[in-house]
Length: 86
Image (cartoon, rainbow, N blue to C red; front, side, top):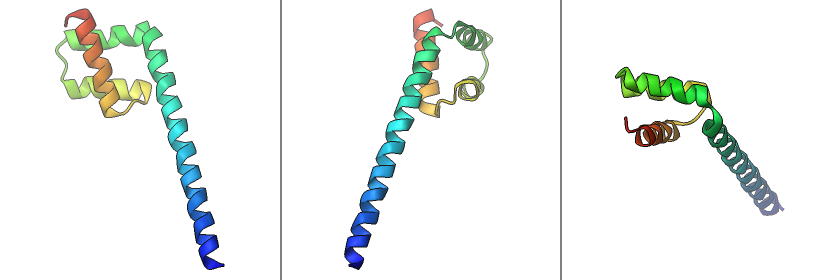
């Protein structure tokens, strides 16, 4: 009987973790879609790049404004630098 309870608890944890991961993935997709259309943020980041701000400051700014993690923020900045030839 104890084993059944442990198995059921484990299955519930796996289900909850799966739901949370899926929710997190959807949130990042929504942020990425918003970034494509956010010209104000894009211009602010381009201005920071052009003013030779430290990369850590720019990444921190993007993270604060968007909620992206470090990797995704750096990816966004690199994409802007490539597109704009900065």
